[in-house]
Image (cartoon, rainbow, N blue to C red; front, side):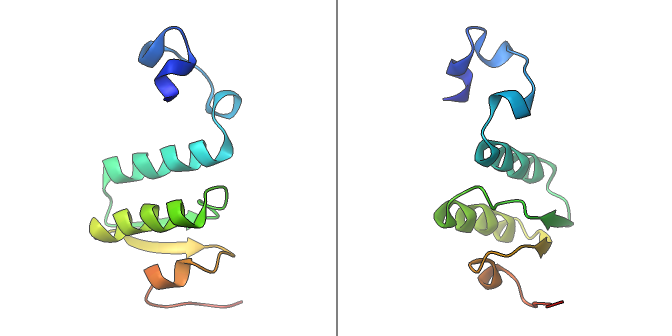
Length: 88
């Protein structure tokens, strides 16, 4: 649906912060992470603008790709996707 927002379609050029909602920006960030498929990543409040269901799907994809994740977050759904939890 993003390609239909501009008359140029997928060839359009725009700034993310001017075009995409915060949740869309966060999902695009995860898509880039999946594409690069690193061994590990550090994520800081990276999914606070998406629903809990979407967040679970995003983290499940990281788990399925065997990406080790260090997450900084206040969300309560995330512990199921991590082996250890550190509180400050």
